[in-house]
Length: 237
Image 1 (cartoon, one colour):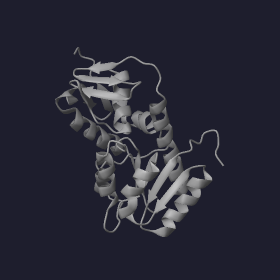
Image 2 (cartoon, one colour):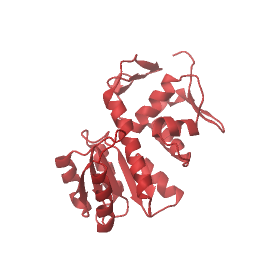
Image 3 (cartoon, one colour):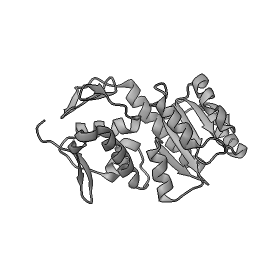
């Protein structure tokens, strides 16, 4: 059954272990979601185009086609570039987690995982996505050649559209809205990822690095506060 806090969504689960897909499908459906589960990664992209999921849960290590490869293919498709992706993996090394986030994932959960924690993370991502989709009237935010429209959920860089993931957009939006004010990594984890539980702040650094790469020369507006976090410079354009 759904609850007041639950946001029902269409969720695609891809994992080569039938026990994992069965477990996730059961809990996701019990929470009110519509679920399609696959054990064959080669069918993932085709089913995604038919099913049009609101969120995708991908195992990283799969035969024939890895979760990273599927995620990159989704990000390259304009229809799926903003669809959140959660990676599942048995690989727990820090470099593996960073590679997953840099590969386009919005979150990364290590196996064996807590079903309760995963469900909470799914709801957190869906709440974030709903907030972006609903939109509320707001003024354009500008810094140098960066122009962010909170209502249309668009960013332009030098007059050209900038392709950001939903997480990168919210991260940039928060920095621009709080221009000149330092934001700790812990606060960004709560405000961007909606995580109340303690998780690694390296997640923030990884997404910030990806955002800066996309901003190119305009990344100078995003300042690092050593030992604290980040802020958007309040110097004049």
